[in-house]
Amino acid sequence: MKLLREKLERFRRSQPQVRRDATEDIFERKLYLYPSSFEVANYSHRTPLVSFNPGALVKDKTLYIFPRMIFDYYKYVSSIAFLKVSIEDVLNGRLKTPLRCKILIWPRNLWEFLGAEDARAHLVDDRIYILYTGKGYYLEEKAAKRRDVLGFAEIDHEGSALRKAFFRIRGKEGDYLTPSNKDSTFLWIKGDKAMMLTRPEIAGLRICWRAEVDLKEHVILEDALTPVMNFENWELKVGWSTNAVRLSRNEFLVGWHGMLRDDLSYRNGLAIVDDQGELLAVSDYLLSPKGLVEEYGDRPLVIFGDGLILYKETLIWVGGVSDYIIGVFTTQLQKALDKLRWLRG
Image 1: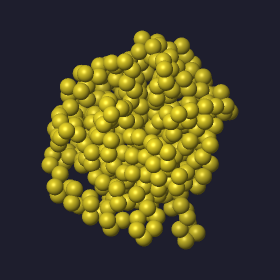
Image 2: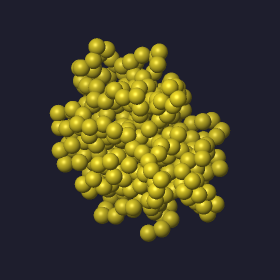
Image 3: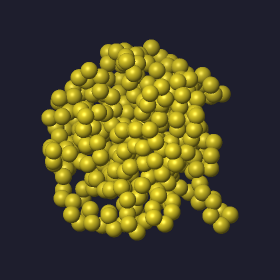
Image 4: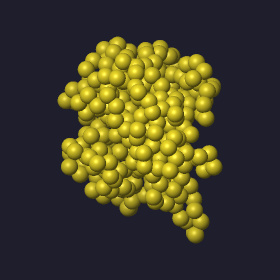
């Protein structure tokens, strides 16, 4: 942990301001999916109380959606569901509901005892790799202590989990965990090696990092864990919002979010990174909650994650809205790229 604190301190001292406190919302509101929009096929409760913060990926003309679902308010325990829809129907703003889905990931381990949250989905050959937040406990001196970990699930083509684990950080003195690690996505995966954008909590601060990971042992390599983007002085924290979309051989587009000090709202922008996770370009805020439907929910003033899709020339952001519904937001790719400022490259 000492090495990461030193990296963080050096980065924060040297990092200039790269973004402005400005919002230009360029996304069209295409449709909303409410809890009543879903019919759960494999659980005793057919309709969730809330459904939000979905991961997403596209295969041919099919949009895969992985919504976070909650069925009671006593412990507010989340699961991750799965459904398929026509991407053309989504872009036309019409889906026949209720949409049949099934629970894919639910708490089965101590480290995710309080919920499986906020999926980022990746298609790897005939498998789906999902990064998510495991909200749970660890035991210390016979007492259960709270901790959020970066969960990982490998899903087969039938929707069954082949393996589940969570990532530790591997340093010279062994493996360890930070108080929290979430908001992560893979850039690329080659066998058991991968490059990841991630958000560990170091010294109480939450900023954007990049890292190399070992998928066989589920470890993040400490030596390669490097800060990428800091929160600005009007923000409390910043994190990666979505999966990464490949633009070229060496460029990836990814969504990020910042939480503002003055109203605790979550606002989102876009960034381009290279294949090592280095920040090449970044926007100001391009997507933020507007109006009653988006501003008022279980957690007000939030648009958050988790799915970013490029279909032809349309950029599709599939996100959670104030912790109760799902929104589908679209813009033209070139319009989005025009809003980014290049820092290098």
